[in-house]
Image (cartoon, rainbow over all chains, first blue to last red; front, side):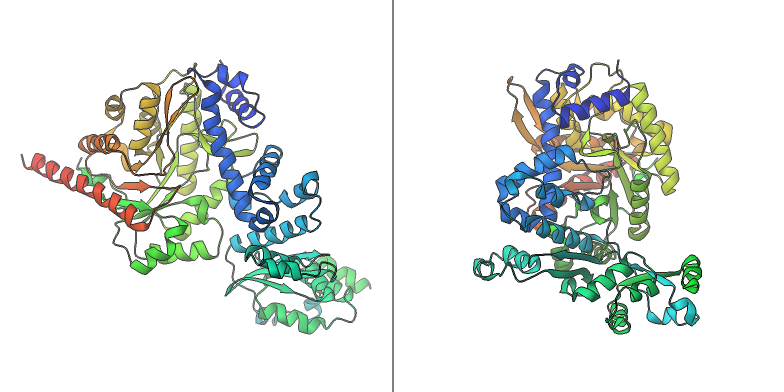
Length: 262
Length: 292
């Protein structure tokens, strides 16, 4: 008699790897594979639907049938780690970039990365933005050593292709706009966020995008400023606060010692 | 014990409907006159638009949280991160009832999004009871556990499903979400007796009833199997079993579930209205019985 853990492992093997013999032997009913497939179909349906909801433009670009086949391959290799499917599928763009049948669409994986940032922005928890006045009480030498936590809806994506225009054209079904795109126009640096008015996708200058990226990764302000020569960091920073893109700050004392040493 | 004492603190012993994203706006626009609603906890774990709708709707309508992913039957234990997400949703939504399933979905740290069947064994019973204790203690409230729809049974099962349900309630003090459609589906699939199933459940533990539609499929070997797909109206046989359940349990909050091929809101409300008719009839009968 299998333990519960053994049975659950065997069932997973039957459902996902399709090695069905061991689990169907433990069923008291005939037609075991058909019965197992009812569960398998529900699982595949739910996970494919989660991917379709997160990657609608990727699905339109490759077609529903191709998408479903790719999703089935992806699912077998990448089961969700939690019962929170709004966060399922972050590895899908990388998977598509390595998936030979999809290789002809050079921008496909980047469109997927944009859609993942959009998915995260739409589902991010609600958090109250940090007010600039909350920093006012800091002594000026500490202000340089401060680091920020970005609003969880904020995502940064870069691509060699105009993926924001591609995404809009694909989802609006605008073939004219799609045909008019200049794929060689140069890289785009995008900021994705959920603002008051809903989803916003903004093109940024490369240097401002890099500066904001450093701050979003939690790098101290002084280091981020030093790494952005020529950028009007005061204005860019003020703009981030005006848009509510930070939710918390910290003062790193190690960083304080390091910058004093400089 | 009076039947009305079984209802949740905020959820009335009337019919409610499952709230799905498609109906967010029409529920607000029409200010639908529905006694209560239930949502899937997992659909409101982030922020943004869905949660804003739920915040607005629950101001006027008592809300129940129905979890589909906690996996009470996992041998390897509960995912503490998921339990915490559930707690956070509950803190914000202040539900009148909270429920989970007698099933499992997680093994080896992977989530398989279905309510997978448990063997009815002493070991599985111990695992489920330990997890129900853990959840009730973490959330600091009583939960309801729902009986499953199943398409297989296991050779090494030793406990009848309704006895398993009753034992979980008795050992942990949790309530039972009696899914009448699931009882119909499982008893038809396995050749059990639906009336015996109902008779085996402790009336005092029944905190909610679920009703839904299901599909009928033919397997390759000719067996007919009923599949709990929540994609159609409640069938007459299930309405009949529902009346039998009400006669046993008294008036109980009853939910119309519809998750696939979701119809216009009016159809859901009409199904709820139909259930309300049976609840009212039970109420009257109970009243007569009390008077006598």
